[in-house]
Image 1 (spheres, rainbow, N blue to C red):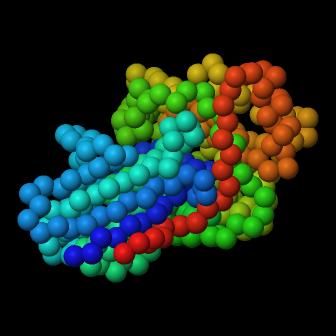
Image 2 (image 1 turned 120 degrees about the vertical axis):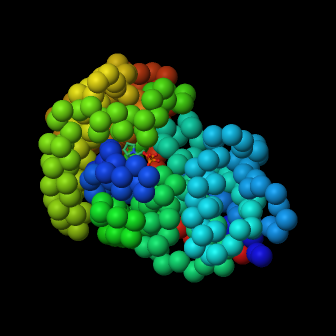
Length: 325
Ligand code: 2P0
C-alpha cells in the first residue's frame, strides 16, 4: 500500500464551537464559523504496513505512547472499518503550528490525518466525508478541510454534522494578529472545559440558542465582505463563550489579567477609529481580527502597554491538500 502525505491548515473560529450534543460522535450543540489560516499547518504521512504489530505514531519526531495517541488510533480505526482492512499504520506528523503561535494544532492535525489515512487506505472520500471523519478526531478539525471561511453545520447525527465552504478564496483584507500571553499547555483542556459547561451551566441553553441565531448574520456579513459586522459578531460570540465558563460549577476562566488588558486595548483602539476586534479560544491568548494596513498601529499601541509581548500574524489559507502519494 502507498504512503500518502496530506497538509491541512489550522483555523480560527469566528463563531465558536463550545459543547457537544453527542460526546462519542462529536456532534456540537451549535454551528460554528471559521477562517482557515495560511501560516500554520500540519503535514501528516500515513502508510498501512502489513505485519506491523501496532499503529506507530510519530509526532514532531517523537514516538507517541499511551493516552496521547488514542485519538489518532480512533480515527485510524474508523478508516480501517470504512476500507474493510485490519492493517496497522505508521503515521508521521509534523506540526508547523508552533505553540508560540498562540493557536491550537488539533484542527490541522486531525484534518491532515483524515486526508492522509483515507487515501492511504484506498478510500476516495468526498470533502464532506473527510470533514465528518476529521470531526471524529477533533470537532474543530471538521472546518480545516476547507480553505477561507467555512461553516460546520451542527447537524444531528454522524452523517449530517460536517463543514461546508462559504468562501474559499478570500481576496479582501482580513488577518488574525495573535498576541501571545502564554504558550504553556492549558490547565483545563477544551474537551473537559466545554463538557463541564454543558453539564453544569444553568444558562447554557440560552447561550446555544443565541449562538445559533448569530449564524445567519455572520454568513451575510461574510458574503458582503462586511469586516466590521464580522468583527462585532466574532467578538460578542467569543466573550459570550468565555462568560459560560464563569457560569459553570466549578467556575473557570482561560482569560488572565493580561488577556483583559489586551481586550480593553482593542476596545480603546476601536474608539479611536480602528477596525479591530478580539477573539479568544481555550487559552489566554488574544487574537485580534484586523486589516493588514493597521498592523503597525496595533503593534505600537500593544508595545506601549506590554513592551515584551510576542505577536504573530496569519492570513486566510487553503483547505486540505494531498501533497505526496
Ligand atoms: C472552536 N475551540 O470552535 C472552539 C473555540 C476552542 C474554543 O474547537 O473535544 O479541540 O476535540 O472536539 O475541537 C477546541 O475544541 O475539541 C475548539 P474536541 P476541539 O475552535
